[in-house]
Length: 485
Length: 141
Image 1 (tube, rainbow over the protein chains, first blue to last red):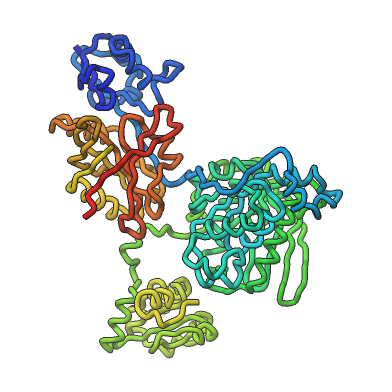
Image 2: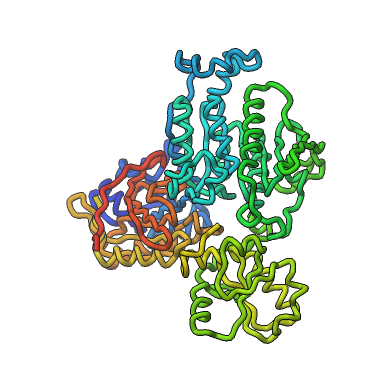
């Protein structure tokens, strides 16, 4: 007779037997024999429709019956049948956010009527509009520079349910612009800090905190329950990810971006309008456009762009006015000028065009040419750790440490003994360096110095290495007296 | 209640820290004594998820079958599954729940910056709709 091995947890249904002998010409018959003998085991293996539960795999000897003839798999009578669950999991799709605050309702309380009085007086909003706001579901990607004013104003306006996706903690360098966080929040999760502030402004809203980075694995799951997505991200992979997810889910993407003194805002993937890829089909080469952490940003700038995003979000909820759909708003803070570019949906767009080729989320790190950081433990070839650089300096090794940052950065923080040659000037100074010398390049975090290393290698330098993590890592691991900026 | 003895506990933590920043997974073998599970052996298993493993894990059923056989040969039972959450709390995520099985204890280890922080154990239901917390005891040294 064939026998079925019984998993520990199910032995309570088989009189504690760890194996049950069964008869039957097929696996299906053998399982029926088992459940006829021990009826209580049935609901553990089969669902209400009488099908094997999704996590149940059946093996005959070493073969999964899915790859044989399934239920019809023939038995000779001497087989061992095993019941093996399929198990998986992960932190992503942590689509159960931690939810705080009140929530949505069909009507306004007297407290809310008083609170929203100035909205209720506007014919464009009124009671009808305020209830639309209360029943709206908006998700913000990021609780940073753009997310700060967004969160404050969406909560104040009474948007009933606000999701926030963020995995970062509040850092001193955030406080110059991320006004939703305060000095007393340093080191706290931005999610918690932002939610506290928003609920202080308006305890009538519900806040869903997603403590994760948005990824191709979790984006659709997280965004699907919201009506409007507001993109406050600071990097290209996530920006393309948010765009593609919004197009696939048919949700408007209220877009904003900032750099130094300039900002942009529009509404993508809304009605028949264009998406981000219609405007920028390809990401810039990695490193070409510096991030705010590298290039700096006027602290007030995200305030204005984020408030424009909040305004567009509220208008979409209300269905009033003219949105920025088909228009890219360009703002130059230094010269205080607003301009507009007309945008149009690209019929050949790979995502929102007439014949899309991107029909599911892809690997956006790869799309943007960014290598995954899988091999953090093993330093890349041509890299040197800050500790090793410190040891070389202490030993008095004969080597050249070049700092490829800008002079104004050098004024903020420097490593003693480093020679300042800004990356842009490096080609003019090649002849001042010995092609056979031992050279280490550093910048703020390691991006620009990698380019310097590549440039030097292309020009015949043989012993060039990039100091991993730049002066920021130096401050962390070698000398905390060197300020981080 | 599930109690993990010192030797398997160290093997689990070591495995989780070594596989960091990816998610690790494995099987826990032991005995059930008057309703209490006692884990006496832990078997690290390969994370078979085809994709980014920093946020996902998948157990190969063949590996689980082998672990179950190993348990039987030693007179033990396969009592639970463990996996890690790198830089994340030791909670039972929706993904965990939707790919779970009610027959085992699911121990989740939170690993932050490569070091073990905390662990919890969960007992999911057959419909994969909820998981109850299970009291978990591990050696504190």
